[in-house]
Length: 204
Image (cartoon, rainbow, N blue to C red; front, side):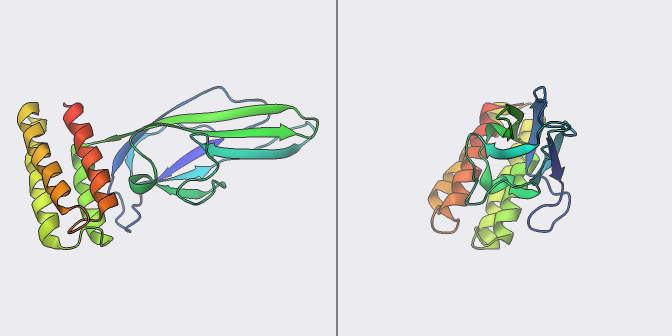
């Protein structure tokens, strides 16, 4: 199984990261012969790219890809090459992409890759820019207000002033709560609130 990542954001802004994607992998079963890669980079979307091959055996009868145990993600399936937008399709924390394969004599095997989605002080600023571009933040004034708070919090965080940074992130959260469903789409507000809470809990 091969899991590859793209650095092009869904808004078309190349190399504008959102979250950190880090993976660990488990030994591969004999029914799959993937090229396995490890990633630890800032990306905005990922591609699920995999091959299932029984080699000289009886041949692959069927295989099922899943993400965290589900065969679909955000209403779409998980065929090889499927683009996954990390900002809106996967929550923070660990995830497992898995393929279960069965050959024509009912031998079964499983291959999986585990990865974790986290947030950075820069990536949450890119959230604001992306949601503004998508119309999920209704106007530039709201986006500028949110971005100014994030820049201030990032500077404090970088200098090791975690408590002060937490206060500014708290003000960012309060503004989003006030704007949710008004100047900011409720789903976008919830994502950014969760990201800010992550940064408060993980400083530096």
